[in-house]
Image (cartoon, rainbow over all chains, first blue to last red; front, top):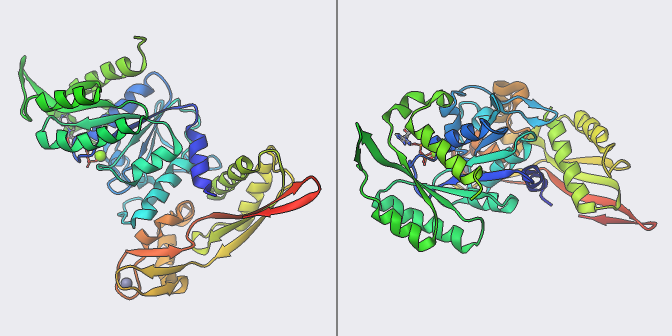
Amino acid sequence: MEPLRQLAKEKLEGKRVIAVMSAKGGVGKSVISSLLAFTLSQRENTSIVDLDIHTMAMSKLFGLEGRLHEVTKNGIEPFSFGNLGVFSLSGVVRDNYVLLPGINQGKVMEGLIAYANIKSSKNVIFDLPPGMGDEILVLERISKYFPIVVTTPSKISTKVVEYLIKYLVNEKRVKPSLIVNMAYFDCNGEIVRPFGEMNGVRSLANEYNVNFFEFPIDPNVEDYVGKIIEYKGSVKVKTDEVVTSLFYSNP
Amino acid sequence: MHEWSVAYSIIRTVMSWAGDKEVLKVTIGIPSFSFLDLDILKDAFNEMKKDSGLSNAELEVKIKDPTFKCRNCGYTFTINEVSDQLQGVREEFGEEYPLHLMPALAPSFIRCPKCGSHDVIAQAEDITIDEILVKESGAVKTTS
Ligand SMILES: Nc1ncnc2c1ncn2[C@@H]1O[C@H](COP(=O)(O)OP(=O)(O)OP(=O)(O)O)[C@@H](O)[C@H]1O
Ligand SMILES: [Mg+2]
Ligand SMILES: [Zn+2]
C-alpha cells in the first residue's frame, strides 16, 4: 500500500492537470510553465508544482530562495501570488543541494504532490525536469495530465523531443500540444529565426498530428527572473493566447 | 504539524482500501529518523478519524530503525553511525526538519561514514501501512 500515491491521486482528482515537459534541457520549460500558471491564475485559482527536485527553478523565477514552506494541518502551504500557489522542494530543503538515488527521487516527488495543499486550485501545473525519467512515471500513476511539450526549432532539440512525442502519442493518453520556444525574434517588424527554420517542427507536428505554437525570443525575460509575475512582454502575451486557445475556447 | 499530514495520508489510504468494512486497528511503520512526534500523530489520527469510516480504528505505530548501505563502497551501517549528521540537520531546520515529511530525502543529507558518498540506500525508510485489522461479519481479519 502506498499512502503517498493514494493521497497524491486523490488530490488531483477533478482538477485540470498540466505537465510542461521536454526531452531536451534548457528550452524554456520553467519560464513557460510559470507564465502559464500565472496566466491561468488570472482566471481561476491555480497551483504550480516544481517537479525539478534538483534544480528547483521555481524558487529562482518567483524569488523564493531561502524561504521555507509553512506546514499546517492541511499540509504544505504554497507561496502565494494572488490566486497562484507555488510549491517547490527548495521550500523544504532551503539552500541545500538535493542529490538522490533514482528510487528516492520519485518518492520525493510523490511526497511533494501528496502533501501540497492544492485544495482550492482548479488548475495544477507541473514543471518537469528535462528528459524522460521518473517524473513522467510518477505523474502517470496519479493523473491523466495534459502534456505541453516544449522544444526550440533547433534540429537537435526537435529530434530529441520526438522521442517524447512518440511516447505520449503511443500511450494514447491526452494528446500533447507542442510549444516551439525561442522560435523567432521580432527585430522591429522583421522576423529573424536564429535557431533555424520551422521545417523540422512542421514535419514532426504533421507526423504525430499535434498542434504547435511558436513563442518569440524576448531578451527581457532574463530581467524578470526573481519576479516573473511582473513580466508582461511578448512571451506572456503569447502565453495568454495559448491559454485561451487551449483551455477557454469552444471550437 | 507534519504529523497531521502523515495521519491524513494514512486515513485516506486505509479508507480507500477498506471500503465500507469496519476498521479496528491500523499498524504503521515509521523510520526513526523522521522524528515525528507520536503523541501528536495519534492525536491527529484520532481527531481526523471521527468524520471518516475509521471512527473505531486504533492506531499503532512501530518505529523502524533503518539500515543503510553505501552503493559506492558497500559499507552497511546503522542509524547510530550517522546520528551526528542527522542531529546537524535537525539543528539547521528545527521544526522544519525536512525528513519529517520526506524521509526519502535522507541520502541527500547524510554521507557514508566510511567513504563520504551520498549514494546511500536505506532499508525501511518509508512510512508504511503494515497491517489493517477489519471486522467482517463477526470475524476479524488481518491484512498486510
Ligand atoms: N522565449 C524566451 N526568450 C528569451 N529567453 C528565454 C525564453 N525562454 C526561456 N528563456 C531563457 O532561457 C533559459 C532557460 O530557460 P528555462 O530555465 O525555463 O529552461 P528549462 O527548459 O526549464 O531548463 P531545464 O531543462 O534546465 O529545466 C533561461 O535563462 C530563460 O530566461
Ligand atoms: Mg526547468
Ligand atoms: Zn561508502
